[in-house]
Length: 371
Image 1 (cartoon, rainbow, N blue to C red):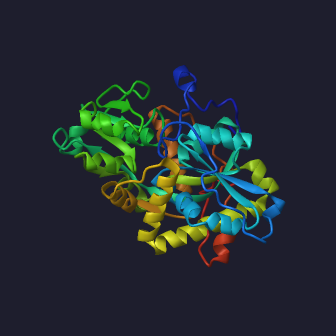
Image 2: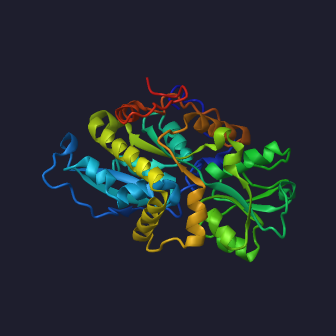
Image 3: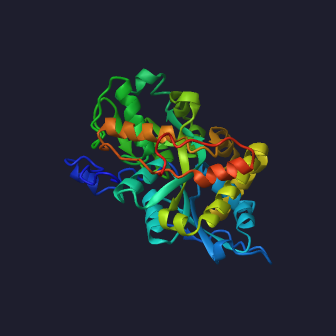
């Protein structure tokens, strides 16, 4: 941890957890492999290179919760902002692999969920990354089999899937269970509710077969379950003030931020422009995101999944810093995390510079900004 390395990120007695990517990102991905250079875009002819760089390497997930990245790639916002510097892309399926790529220099900037950002920051004693902007909020739901579960109280005694032990949704569900007065062992998932850690890509089949009774999952998995006959019992956004909570951030390696601030600013400028375009053109943006998903994965989402999933996601430049700290505290309460020191995880200086130039209000780091 940044201030006190003797405070273990994991509880000392949880040796089994220490071998896992505790707060790995399942909120935004399936599997663990990265694909390289998704776009094939070329530098702008005759334009100057930003910071003299030949390229800037950007990572993201092929998922709707990374809508800013999907649309920014598809519509060319990043390449336009970087001018003569080529925007290169890598698509990731799991948070740990993206953090590894950031640490190794395989990517410079990435769209990633709150849990792996916290994990990467704390495991490096605050030296690996900074969160430099927001991207999306929401898009997480508790979907159940309406024949087995008709009300929230009926969740007790049932088998509910989450994407991965200790991931963003797993922590949120464990926190919600505790607030109902029920008890669940966080490691085994056994207790008043059976928490079944299941990869998002197989959750719809597990639901269809009846091996799980419901799932607390992100989009588009939630809408896939609804398409299989599930019912949304609870939208996680209803549990948060203003119905907003962070699901995707923008991170950068501290080394790249220090050495190439102009390039980071160019990417943030593109992100802000992309978000404005998305919010002004929701239908066209939805189509662009799906088109990029098809290009990245070989398969677009059907309308009965895409439409409800898109509606549940809010696009924002604000990283919603206070909710990141709350999510971390939920993990502490669940027994999966020990007092993470998040001071300095944010550096919103360049984002606020871009927002000011656009005539927008600055965003806040909730006391967790770099000094």
